[in-house]
Picture (spheres, rainbow, N blue to C red):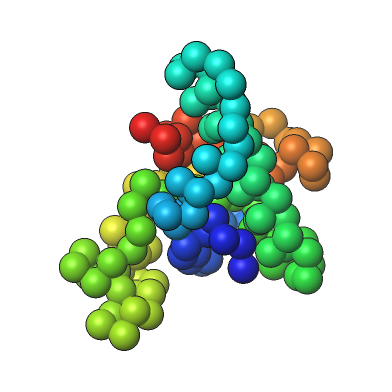
Length: 141
């Protein structure tokens, strides 16, 4: 329901909480970045863009969580570098997500997402959403 989010797959079977794998819409990310108009050197600008994107994705997840209870809410998430596609076997020809194939394909990322959460000390509810973002999620590289 957010223009930056292209695809989302909820995971969490046999896990301590609900998680999600997210892909971003590359065209909207470019549009969004252009709208930021941050001034500074390239490295500083990239860091500020990354932080702003982090905050925006966190807000999108929080909005998605608002109509559901805590037990059903997304508590961890991972932004994937590439969208799911038919050629990779992760979408059907009618563009439906192949959930089982996605979970198998991204098993390492899913495990890492939950391990990172387990290593993070208990956070406040406001900070909890940020636990879904990892340095590997830098989509500007």
